Amino acid sequence: MEKAQLNYIDDSVIAWLETLDDIIPSLIKEMVTSTKQNRFDLVTNVDKSIQQKFEQFLAQHFPEHQLFAEEKSNVDINARQGHVWIMDPIDGTTNLVKQQEDYCIILGYFVDGEPVLSYIYDYPHRKLYKAIKGYGAYVNGEPILEPEPIDLQEAIISFNSLVINDETIHDLQDGSFGYRCIGSCGLDSIRVIKGQFGAHINTNPKPWDIAAQFLFSSELGLKMTTLDNTALDFAKAGPFIISNPACHEAVLAILNSGKGYKK
Image 1 (cartoon, one colour):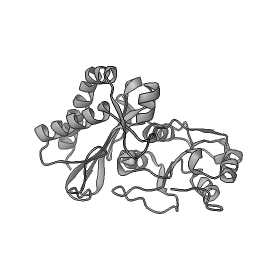
Image 2 (cartoon, helix red, strand yellow):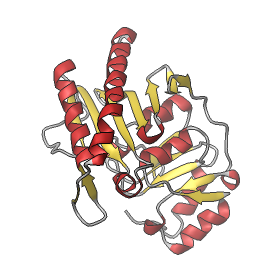
Image 3 (cartoon, helix red, strand yellow):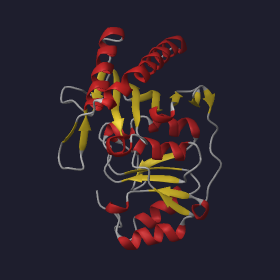
């Protein structure tokens, strides 16, 4: 894709994201919450409205682009062909409902299966992280530098302790410097992208949870793989790790000893 066309799409999407600053407060003020599979699997009018507005944006400005997203049926979408946006309108919905903080919007733009634009918008803190294929990563327009190497013993790592057995949790904590979990795959990943965390592990992500991280990883020299250390399919997702390269193998070695996690 030519740089001029890529810049035009990027500028258009950023302008659309800026419109959310005026929309989200009223949506939150009148927030309506419902459940999907269980009482912990939440969805709100905020999720649905943001996704609907982005779908309308694409129809108006880029009608040849398709949307593969959390709050819709995607049976008619082949994510590996053509121009496809993968979206999580609110990543960290529980945090939105319970805290009104620590949630974000995730967007990944793929052309014939290759990531070319990525966005993670930390709306509560008004920080927009983006990556452009071949041109690096940025936060609010300022370049993000490639993180320095972090050995596991010096690394803070992020994972959901509810899906990892006790012995493995202790081994991960003993081997690392510390443990945190924000509860938003996008924001936990951002800590790795910025060099604040050594690794983030998620044993059951969907494509929209990890759509943006592929390009950030490739632009910043990070490791993003399955938990078996194989290539990760962006259209299927599944258990994954995004990691500083210096501690990637050490984290996986602990995680996979004794089958220490469940999907």
